[in-house]
Length: 217
Image (cartoon, rainbow, N blue to C red; front, top):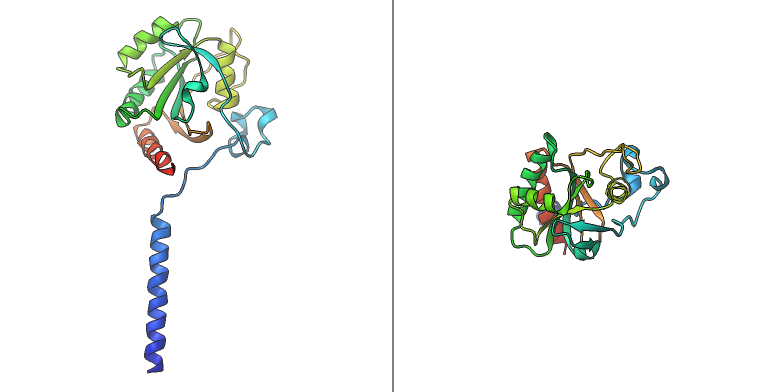
């Protein structure tokens, strides 16, 4: 009798352990919160490389495709994807914008999600040109915003806030950014992921991660 009781207890403990393990594995792990210290040092300004927590996308003041001055207040409490492009780019930018069309479609009508595309050639990409580009890619402007403005500010955002590129510079006349990176930002302006915007597989991962982030509440 004692052996049977012991066996039953052992089996019970094993079943309970398997049950707990199943739910631990099944529970979705939260996305990483990125700080400068987590990243490739080449992506990070030298003065920020020791920062290991509390990084936030900084405030900005730019102009959208309608010619309106906007700040990042329009992103308050929103999940969003940021990228950097230019309208005359013949290589990676059209591919990236096509992929962002997929992202927009996946979250159509979601007022808590946005896409923010910054031109890296603001001296050419006026609000009017950005509006034409937005129409070309069937952008819902309530959800997908295109930004232009001061080049130095845009380049500083790309390098020191989004960590989108490895190159150094100050946004001067001869400075130029070209990157395929998409950056996922949460409701608290924290970076939660980096993705290759030219890769359909990586953009599938981005769409999946946005859904995870929404489930985090």
